[in-house]
Image 1 (cartoon, rainbow, N blue to C red):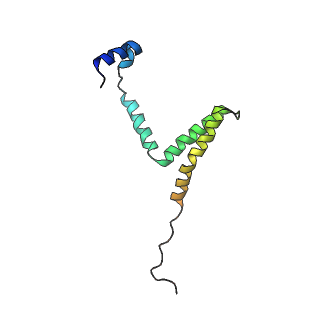
Image 2 (tube, rainbow, N blue to C red):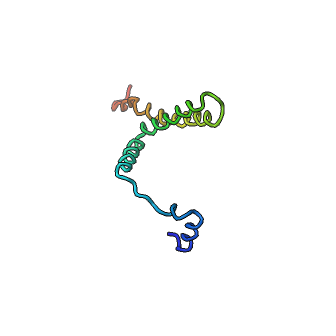
Amino acid sequence: MLSSARQCALRQVCGAASMTTTALTPRALEYIKAAQAVLAKTDGRDKLVATLQYAAMFAAAGSPGALLNAQKSLSNARKPFRALKARALRPRAAPPSVFPRS
């Protein structure tokens, strides 16, 4: 917690309006909970990063620059998600036999 003198100094510098907090509406809280539920799963995070990747690619329009670099970075960031997804889909190896081969 800030001391009252520091709060007063912050009000003078930042303005009194920035010191107040606003409550979220119930509808906004529902959206936040839904987003948290989607992002809690690996597939949801992959889809979010894919959306950002393709948005950056569309905005960059193939021209070199920061957006194209961001698209390439997001592409590399998605690789672990896809690797984990492929590993989860692969069938597991059968357990070793109880009787050794002669």
